[in-house]
Length: 314
Length: 280
Image: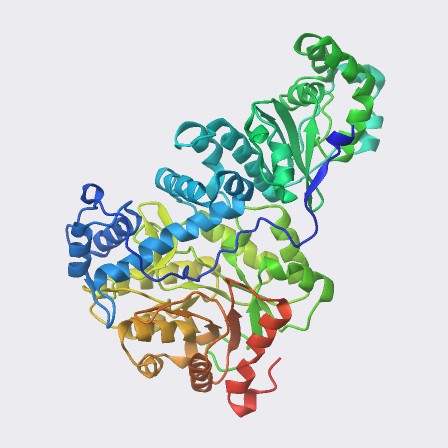
């Protein structure tokens, strides 16, 4: 079981995924951008506040600079003492993307490491275009990254990247999750034996169960320990991981097929009786035997880890 | 107490940043107060609030927002305001502030502080929204002058005139960021003193200072590095005009140790009027 020992992800206060949103502007000098006239926003139809605001936001978020955008900027914005209107607009165009890329770097450090700086930045720019923010906080901005990797991004290791993004997003979710209630060992022990078969164990607020086509938790751990990635890291090899929080520490625990099957069934709302039956049909004989031997130990560990919010006796 | 809102002068504080959490939690340093970025503690119910609760238990907190989008022509976001009030009540925040800007429109949030055109239409629009927000908060909102890199050709007045009129018309408080005055003065070619001359000082409840990054053609409000002496001197001038108010250092990139950050904030004492140098 040593390979499944839970690994602390973030202990204490030093490493948190709280994004440092601030009123600062990302530092840059103005740089030349790729230019394309095709997607230039239309100039405002009038001088109303609404029309000016819509144009300004469109001008900042438009994917490319263009001659037409420069001409509109020269008409709608005042040149500065040392920088023309297009150059001044470019500060906002850069800042918009840089701030959101920075947010995605916070959420997906291992994905950035896996893809390399340039590929990750390209991925982020595509993501920002596809999933612009509409919320006041950026805490939820990166939610769609796994899906984006899987479906939209031009990536060399698409499925691996999607799996890794799923793991990293689970860490973000668990960090921010509310833990209202958790099942205690005492409460579990007080369940009468005859009630066990119909008992349901709903999941706790700060636990996520994930199945992957690749061993991304192992890759993530290697990333945390500064190991260089190897080709094996990108090879398909199914895995499952639980991500959870106890008090203020985040943990990652690799799961055997039997563990994952049990937890999936319970988290889906099935009774303990129905869940144990799934072991017989959903697992190899070896995995089922492992489950029979260890199920009580696993339950004690899972309860201690806060995997369950409580017990529902129907 | 110099301001008309009777908001306290908290002394010299610093922005609360995660890299400093261990030091603050373990060492409980002698700091007058902390300012939080409000949105960092929204859409969360986990670890961020745990640390904030521990710090708010010991230190006065001021809330500084970046997403109210007071200048936007989208409707005010009531859910956001509710969350803001809940956070204020949770932290017992002494001041709630945001920026004179818009951050987006048509339900897109750029998460940047975008300048609005300074027109009569915009003044009426923003005034009504500030009044609505203050009704919601049940107290004053402090608005900060942003650093800006563009001016709209359609503006009918300068930013300082707009800000002064807005403060009077909406009866709101002001957070004067003297680094932003300095940055915008360079970028637009005006004298920072002209800006200060237009400020209704009895409405200033709070000052910001920060480092910036100069590129020769323009200055970016990067919040990197120590505060330059001209900005400190501008603070001294503004502080004297206001008759005192809370002072805060923002350092948001390449953040040094807690001690170095705090020491930089306390440099304010060298530039404040002599009678204020005993500030915490």
